[in-house]
Image (cartoon, rainbow, N blue to C red):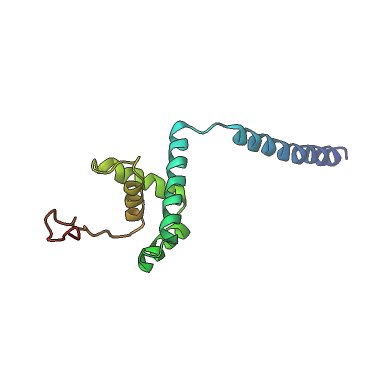
Length: 131
């Protein structure tokens, strides 16, 4: 006869302790410091987001490129784009992560944007200075 009330009391005390344990775990996770690699990915992700925002706000950017960037941002977390961009930057020595244009090119390429090579104007193209 005493077993049922004791069992019920034990169950209630366990139920009361469970949220406390979860709260403690959540507090511990909130107080956990990110690793240097996580900080690096976060900073890169923010620079990518700024570059994408700039591209989305420019009139001269092709609407298809804007659509690809928006779709990529909608379908992928920035952390995933950042990590994939880092892999592209690491595998292409000609790209420098510190250069915003190179970072944009790597991130947009990860998002499926295709770039075409633009030829630089020739030094002697026949233009005059107006005299």
